[in-house]
Picture 1: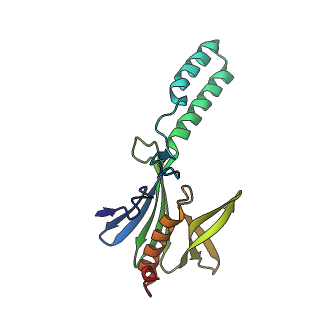
Picture 2: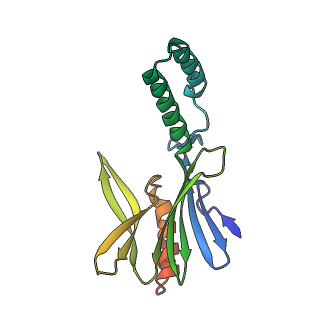
Length: 195
């Protein structure tokens, strides 16, 4: 295994991990501030100001409903479950794994930042059904966003689009590096790095 960070100065959250037989293009859920200060902006947070307030709020609520109201206990329980779920359902990183003769796999890893990922969603697209891997652009409010998409042909001939890095939406230079890597591995032909 060899891990490199090809865009270390501007996008250190992006890394390429080369394994024997396949490559992984990983984008972690943090980035540098765009103002050049070098400040890290985290997408997934370990602790916030709300975390120490939660036990205090629950202890106050528990003492108020000590009369045994089932509805109050259910509300407290549901609120606690929703809070824990929101902390453990953060996107930690997303990856595109490229298996040159087999296909590509799009992954999203979720969990709490101080733990190992609790949930991993994987979508494999076989090489025979992979029509193309492209950079699209879309509008989001008043902003133009670029994103990577795999165009997949189904068995009945219909086309579907699978978006890579759909939760993190990295910046264009990261998308371009992944695009070139996938194109060179999956669609051999003229070298894209020369253009």
